[in-house]
Length: 234
Picture (cartoon, rainbow, N blue to C red):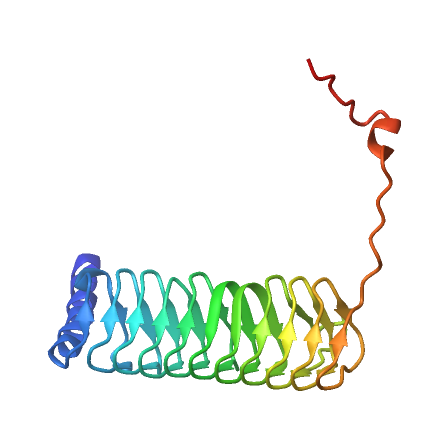
């Protein structure tokens, strides 16, 4: 009985794959594609191995959905590339690249021609057209405009332990690496946030914001404390 149930489910799954293939969808490995019959996929899209598409998901034309992606109840526009990522109850605009290893949580909307790179997490946020978050960034409860650059290690600090707050980054802003935006703050159009800054106040348009202490070097400090001994050159 158990074996019969498995065979029935496999037949249903393969029927969905065959129907999509007949409509112009390409599969790298038909045997490892797991697609609900409620999902739509446009012609010319390539589905990689071990991909799961669930619920009301709609994939556009000419997309590449790479290995190990899990996409649930989401809208993916035309010519989108998704690599080894999880997308849930979200939307991705045309020409955008997602992953590898990105995580889009419910309520996220990414515009056209964006980059959501490796180990980027987006939650309940919007990214305007052409915005890039290439790697290691958390975007939570934020409205990010068009043409914004979010550097490596940027964190939207949206939770104080009791409440969650929302921040805004306007068009063309540049957020340097390892910056914390402590919500709620607004970063003005075209503003630059220097790398390593923690932002706790609004920043006006066209401004440079620096929030870090000046570095200081103390020569010989390490060896004076016996932590490290310099080797004599022979």
